[in-house]
Length: 345
Image (tube, rainbow, N blue to C red):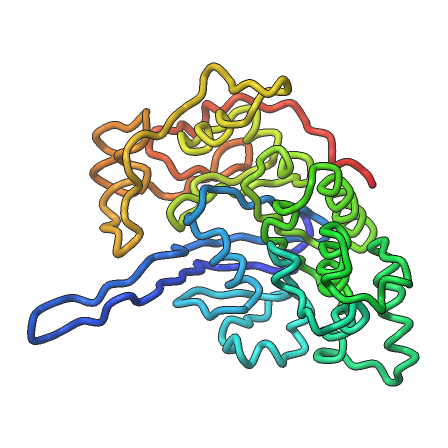
C-alpha cells in the first residue's frame, strides 16, 4: 500500500488475569494470553479477513481494535494518533469513536427489542454527532437505511417484526450512519441462510467500494473470506501465524496451520479433499505459555526438534506475506496466480 494506514495496531497484547499471586504459599499469578504482540494495518477501501479456530483470539482482537476493551500493552493509532491511552469508557464518548464501528455476530441479540428500526439506526448518531434538528436526523436515518436496502416502511417496526436478513442490514446501517473508516464485522453472516448471506456480502462489498470504508471480516467460513477479502490474517492461540494476500494464502499456504485450515474446505461437489490435514493432539494452554516452543507444537504434522525448543518469530517472505514458522523458507514460496478482486455488487 502506497498510502499511510488509516488505522494501525502496534504490538497489541491482551492478557486476562485469572488468578492472583499468594506470597505466603508461593503461588504465582496467572493470566490467559488472549492476544499476543499483534501488529497490523488497515487502508481505506480494503477488506481484510481474520480467520482461525474458536478460542484463537479473533473476537478479543476485534474488541481491542474497536476499543470496547482495554489492551494490556501496545498501541492503536488512527491517522497516526495514538488512542490506546484513552480508556474504553472514555473512548465511547470521544469524537474518534465514530471512526471504528462494529457489526456483531447475532443481529437479534445486538438489537434493543424496545427500539424501533428508526431509533436503532439513529442512536449512534444521537450519541456521537447529534444533528441540528429532528428533520435532519430523519433525513440521515432514511438515507442510511436506503443505502443498505431497507425500505422506509420498515423504520417504524421493531426487531421481532424483521427477518434475519433485515436485522443484519439494520446492524450494518447502525454502524454506517456515523460514517466510520473501519468496520469490524464479527461473523456477520453466520446466522443467515446462504441466499441471504450472498445479499449481505454484496452489500458490504458495495459499501467498501463506494464509500472507501475498510472492512475487517472475522469468520470461520474460508470460502466467504476468499470471496470478500483481498488480504487474510490467520490466528492461532493469540498469535498471527500467517498473513498475506488472498491468492497467495489459498494457492500456496506456508504455515502448517494455514494448510490444515484450507484442507478442511469442502470441494465444489460437497466432498472433502483427499489430502485433509488433521491436527491431532490437544492445543497448548493459553494460560502463561512458556514462550520456549511453537504454540502449534504437539499438533503440527511437520514439527521438528527446533519447534519444541524456541518460539518462532513472524518473518517477512519474498511475496509480501508474513509467516511464523521455523520450517517455512522465505525464499521458496511459489508465486500465486493473480486473483480477481471481490465481486461487484
